[in-house]
Image (tube, rainbow, N blue to C red):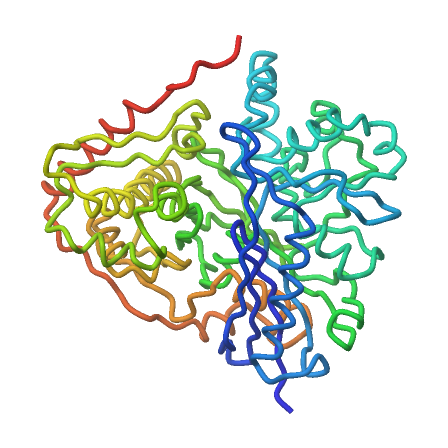
Length: 497
């Protein structure tokens, strides 16, 4: 009988799952969306039960689609939306409240207070991150304060974790409370140099150690999925945050290799080797850990990428389906002078401005829905260009190519525009679900399917290469106009006193 690795890809707007064989060939993907909750301006939440139920449903559907059985699955890997925080009761397993999503800016005032107290240098030195509401620590503290759970958390009665930890807890029937180094490195509580929860950071944010999961390498044992979920026990052997999983799935194993995932947000990672690099305006993060060997990356985070297309569909009703975006963008001859800066929840790399807000500029009487959609598509590429520029400058490397993946990467117009903006080739992976591919690859390494990353690199395959066609003058003009638009949206909301 054929054997498979099952990959769970729990994302921001949907839960996906598929299986991979030994040649890293994917089976059909099963995907289910779940509700988004917006309780206030800039605040985003998920019902953790929706995450669990949709992910379990997707995994079971993927196994059925593949025509396989649980007995054919040698291991399970998990990739997950990062920084999103769940708190749950150890005894009942029930969440104490909705999860606070990585996109949420609700803890911006707490971050501002800590900055004024001079905490940012300490945080930056130990975690490689910036003091921003994007990350997990202030979210955990907010939920503890909101529900008066500090005493119970100190006794270990209330548990906290990123989404991977919650899924592991549920899959193992409450037997394992664990996370991997990549997810831990996004919490502001984890020292990326010695790969441990840091007492000084825990005290700074007021988060009890007793509520946190055990941190393990990305390819390791994370317990066993109970047989009630799939009909047989399945070892959980690989875990990584979605962006690190995508970089691993894209086989970015050599320093200087970079990938960008075009999804709800856009996230670029640059492999910098076995030592972290401190870089202004960028994040230094753990890329993955194989045993004692830790690989570090520089990361740039664009908060609203494909989510802008979703907003045009759900918020403005301009699109019936997100897939219509490429057709409508091509319906106009050019951008018509229209720029859309989708700072709907602030700006990430390299600006880190939680008080920026979205802006559309350059409209005239000739502007159409096509121009607005085209501007939203182009905004993904402009933001990624800003990130890549900052990365290569800080790391002192020249980008030779960008490997692309994610739902929006199917848009040929976007990929060509990205190559034109960068002046470098963009190579799109043949396997579109590279986040799931990375989770499966890590699990396959841990269970012995493959012995080295080099074996995985030989299996990576390109779908299409997009080569730049613009002149340097064209590139300078368009990027200059974009920068002018970005400056006009920055600091729109006044910081709290």
